[in-house]
Amino acid sequence: MSVSKYVGRFAPSPTGPLHFGSIITALGSFLDAHSQKGIWLLRIDDIDTARVRTGACDAIMRALEALGLHWDGDVVFQGQRLAAYQTALAELRSRNMLYACVCPRRILKGKPYPGTCRDLTAPPRQRHSYRIKTHHESISLHDRLQGQLSLSLQKEWGDFIVHRADGLIAYHLAVVIDDSWQGVNHIVRGMDLFHSTTCQVYLQKIFGVDTPSYCHLPVAVDHSGKKISKQNHAKDALLHEKPVSILIKALTFLGQQPVTGLQQASVNEVLDWAKQNWDLSKVPKRQEIPVSL
Ligand SMILES: [Zn+2]
Image (cartoon, rainbow, N blue to C red; front, side):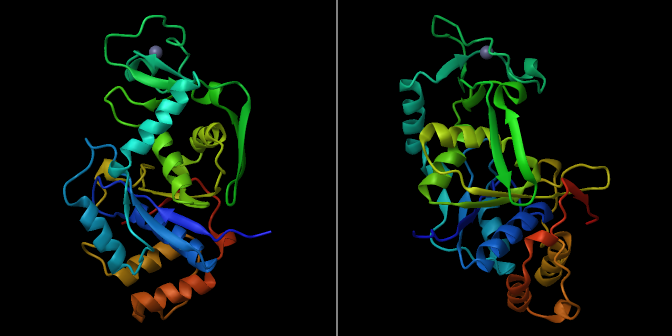
């Protein structure tokens, strides 16, 4: 039996500079891949064109390089993968798994979609999204850090959107198609995506592709409990701080107890230490951890 090589990835959206929250994910996935002699890919999730900021992609790549987080192979841009997503949508359509939905997002108020448009007979003339039919059976996944998760897509999300009303491809569809196409078999990312991973597992089953191994790391929040993200204008981590001290902060956040003396070391020395000592069982099993930046 052949054991497939570890293929991991980091997939930031170029909506702003690399902030401390995404550095944690980048570092965690990088170390997990390297500690298992795997490869670590970089994919730019730039399909949400309205949110993409000019220059953000270059800034993210420069920041990763400054932090010594060098990726393997060519960078993949989701914006160049639209044909593959259209093929996937066509497959779902031909299998009668999609339907048009005209409900504005705001009326759902975060509640699961009740299937209002499932039985629309005539194709709608107004703007519409496409939803995928889900069912009541539970979808389960085992997370290496967070343990078992099992939930009913119907109860949690309802039929979810795969093609948005603004014409953009929904995240869940794009990410499943790309992870499978790139052979990604290990995903390490933030806890904020944990529950919605079930939507991706559902799509993987539909397309008959392997479900990768998942590991969801705690996310950094500010002291009011808000996720540190580009949406709340998190600052560029490298603007006022040296790469080595950011790496040490991120290692500490991930429970890795960097040894004293590393503050004076080089980026590569810090990463060498971290690769040799990476221990997933030391990462706090928490949803979020407050940090002061
Ligand atoms: Zn609807």
